[in-house]
Image (cartoon, rainbow over all chains, first blue to last red; front, side):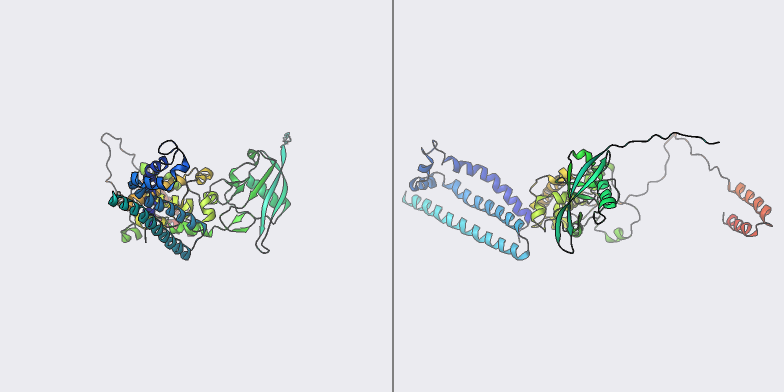
Amino acid sequence: MVRESTLSLLQYVTAMILIIVLTVHVLTHIPGIMYSSYHESLEPNNVYRNYRIIGGVLAILLPVAAIHGLNGLRGILLELKQGRAWELLVNIVMVILGVYAIGLGMITLLRWLGILYWVG
Amino acid sequence: MMVETEVKEIKVESKEVTFRIRRYDPETGKRWWAEYKVPVIRGMTVLDALLYIKENIDHTLTARYSCRMGVCGSCGMIINGTPMLACSIQVLDLGTDVVTVEPLPNLPTLRDLSADFTRFFEKHKLIKPFIIRVNKEEYESPQREYRMFPEELNAIIQFAYCLKCGLCYAACPTSAIDKLYLGPQALAQAYRWISDVRDEGMIERIEVVDSAHGCWRCHFAGSCSAVCPKGVDPAQGIQLLRALALSLRTGRSKVKKGSPIVQPSPATRRPGAVEPPKPTVNIEVVKENLKKLIESIEEELPSIASALKEYMESL
C-alpha cells in the first residue's frame, strides 16, 4: 500500500511538471501562435501534427495529468464517503482508470509517432 | 455609637437582547429554535445570559460550562455563526439585537447546546498525546525530569496552549464531511508532541497522521486558526506536520533522540559570592526551652507534656 505522504509528494511533483508541460500544450491551442483559431488547432491533421512537434511534451503530459487528476479525485472521493470497503474500491477504480487512460493515450501517441518516424 | 452611611443606589442600564437558541431533545429527536429575551448589562457574557435564561426563564436549557474564564474550554458553541467560547465573549460586543446560539457542529449533540466530545477525544488519543521514550524502564520509573531548555519550549508552546475546546474541529470544513479525518486539534497536537525535544515517538505518530484521513486531507482553509480562543495556529501545525512526514519519508530527516535526563549539578558557589546566612534556630536552645515548658505544665497538662516530650526526643 502506497503511503499518503508518497501520494502527496507525487501530487506536488506532478503539479510542478504540469505547469511547464501544460503551458506548452495550451500554447499550441491559443489562436495566433501555431494556428489561426482554436477550432483549427483541434482539426485532426493539426492534432497529429502536434504529436510530431511536441510529442515528447505530450508523452510527459499524459501520465502526469492522469496521475495528478486521478489522485486529486481520489482525495475528494475519500472525503465524501468513509469506510474500508469504499477506500479499497476508490483505490482500485483509480488505478484501473489511470492504467486505462495512460495506456490508451500512450498507445495512440506512440503509434502515431512510430508510424511517422518509420515512414519518415 | 451608630454610624449612618448613605448608600447610593447604583443604576445599571440594561439592554434587551433576544437569544435565539437551537434546542434539541434527544428523547424525541426534535430540533427547534427557542427565543428568549434577556436584559443584558455591560460585561455580561453569552454564558451569563444562558445561565440567566436557565435560572429565570427556562430551566430545561442545557449547556456545558465550568470555569467561566476561558480556561477549561467547556462552553464552546456557535454564537452568531462563529465558534466561540460562551464565557469569553460579551453579549454587547457582538453588536446585534438578536444573538443566535447553536451547539458545535461536526460533533453529535447530546442535548441543546451540549456536544458529545467522545469522537473528538478518541482522535486526540490516537496521536498519543504524551511523551514516548524508547527506554521504557527509565520512562516507567523516572529518577529525574527530562531536559528541556526555554527556547525548546518556546518552539512548541503555542500548541501546548490548546484547551481541547473543539472550536477548531467545529470550524473545520474537512471535519464536516470526513468523519474519520483526525481534525486540526489532534493533528496540531501530533506536531506538538513530535517536536517536543523530550519525545521519541515520531515514527508512531507519523504512522497515525500519514494516513488516508490524516494530515494530507487538510485543505488549508485556516478556519481552525481563526477561531482558536488561545491563539493556537493548528493550520500551521498541520503544514509543519506534513513537512515532517515528507522529510522523514524522503530520508531528509532522521528520527531524533529525546533529550537526556537532567543530571544534578554539583553545588558550587561563584567565587566571591556572599556566604549564605547560618541557620537562625539553634536546636539546643529549642530543646532547653521545651524542657522548661514541659516542667511548667507537667502537673496541669500531663498529656500535652508527654506529647511535647516525645517531640523533643525526636529533635
